[in-house]
Image (cartoon, rainbow, N blue to C red):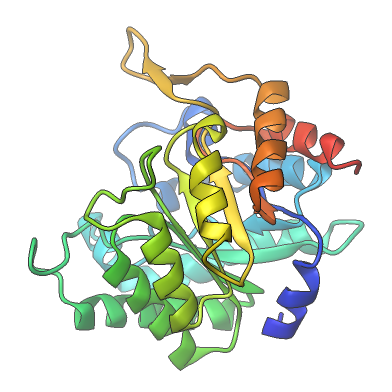
Length: 293
């Protein structure tokens, strides 16, 4: 996908997929394991989920490469398999997208290193840039259509991802930060500052994911829309979770209510929407129905 193709696609509302992690845990993925390694061993489970999203109406599905950077894989002693892991995981999503009866795009999913950036921590811009450059080059060669840096908690680290992408490919890159209901970012700054900086750096779409429920993000999305000229993304959780007796996060917002709140986010300026933690293909289907699809 070229950047021009992306601009054409986003002339209408684009529907992303929903959660991956919470659905895999519901399918008995143990806590604490390397998600990427587990998906490699449970291809059928993952592809069934993604086929559900495609059937529900997703235009873009996320490859399960979220933690496929060298720093995260090193924590699981898998760093020497970084190319094989990312390439195989992209192929899982590519197979689903290519088998669809309509055009479905595959986004390479990347995220934070999990380390604090300087001066709060010891992660440098240069180290973050190299981490992203390595993974993005592998993902590009694996055949993805675009890049998405999601669940980001630091503006500088996200800028490193955008800069790294521009050095190895010309694929579109979407960026979403995790924020509080007031738009503040965990490591400092806010969603509006991030969006403006990321657009200036070359991001093709900006917004928020995970964070809180869609009902709490209307002002955040509206403020981002008023300050950037590129598409705005909203991929929130299914409301705020509560922790049950087994220590599991339970999301109480039902699919019809989620869809109504997503419609409100679209009215506030979001042009690319989907779901994060707690959402399933049912949620995406409800959104698609409200969009008249």
